[in-house]
Structure formats: structure tokens, C-alpha cells
Image 1: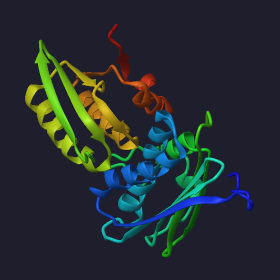
Image 2 (image 1 turned 90 degrees about the vertical axis):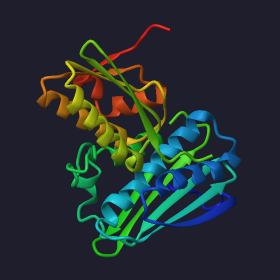
Image 3 (image 1 turned 135 degrees about the vertical axis):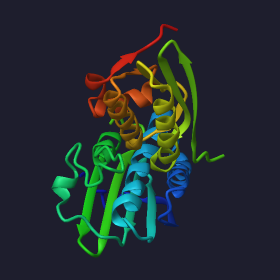
Length: 151
Length: 110
């Protein structure tokens, strides 16, 4: 994952907290996309962001807070050089093996008709993804999207 | 306006059941879509199940799960599944999962 250069100025920042209700998936992706609109993205950039955010938030609901409820913390930072950083954090169960979880078609919830393509979609539609997780403590997914890049 | 649910319309013509979800397919809306679709498939017992994706405004990987689930159900009923007219965005996601290698995709000429 490309790191954000220290000298890049922050243009704007948003924090959002939502309970892990599936009805909030649409809310979360729409809110993040609306905030990122300040960087003057094209239709493809917006669609990419919406889809990647939807995957990360769905993971919180389906996996992190499976059989329970919790809070999903979303932080969006917009930088002067048209980069946006989207952090999606939960205090859920955590992922024992992140490398395995990121494999295409890997799922722990086949009965729920999860395709196992969530991380693959996030990787394909952004310019960088970092996953930090600790079992019992939670997971943070950081997505980087450079507006106007051809990905 | 934030639309949080998908809707399903259907047509039945000579053993071919066409399911046309509209709006947004995500994990939230897929639950209701799945129930409605399966009830229709069981009731009509089609020879061909066509999933028309031309009116989808948003779809994430939950849509892949929805399509694969219906494909698997149809297969148990000896029914063939086809995908119809996916848009550019939906096609991208289908391609990520290699869906077009499993389920035939039909595109009508415009």
C-alpha cells in the first residue's frame, strides 16, 4: 500500500459512526461518496468508492459483529493532491488470518450467500488497501483512492 | 435520496422466467430479493431463468452471491440460468468473480 506523504496537506476530514445495521450500508457508501465529491471525482471514481465502502461496511456487519451489534467507525480524509483515505474500523471479533481472508472466493459464511469477493472488490476499485486486525479487538480497513487515476 | 432497497419485477414467457431486480443490490436488499426470487422460481418451475441486470443502479459483491444462489437453486431444478444486459459497472464485478465463465451472458443489441 502506498503511504500518504507526510508533506501532503489535509484538505478536509469527516468522521461518521453508525450502528452495525444492514440498513446503514447504503447510508455509509452514500455519505462517503458525497464527502469525496469535494475532490471533483468522475462517475467511475464515485462508483468505485461506493462499492469499496459497501464491501468494508458489510464485512463489519456480517463478520465483525456477527450475531451481535456494535459501532462502525468511518473516517475520511481528503488531501490536497486529490487523494482520499477512507478508514473503516470495528471493535468486533477480528480476523485470525488476514492473508487467507483476502483470498478471492474465501468466505466463512457461504450459507449467507457471501461470495467471498469483498476484499477482491476493494482491491480492484481502489489504489491501495491495508487491513489491520486483532482477534477479539477488531479490524481496521484503510482504503486509498486517488481521484482521477485510472486505477 | 438514498435508496436502500432493491425491487424485483418478473415476466414468464414459455418456460422462461425473467427476474429483473432494480435499484441497489447490497447485503441489506439481497435478503428480500432472494426470498422473492426463490418463491417465484419454485412456483413457476421455469426451464430457463434469465436474470436481467439492466436496471441495477448499484451492486457490490452481495449481488454475486445473489446471482450464484439463484443459479444453484435453478440447477437443482434442471433449469438453465442466463444473465441479461449487465451494465458497465455490474460487468466489472461479474468479471472479477469470473461469473461469465459459469453463467452465459446475453446482451441485446441496442
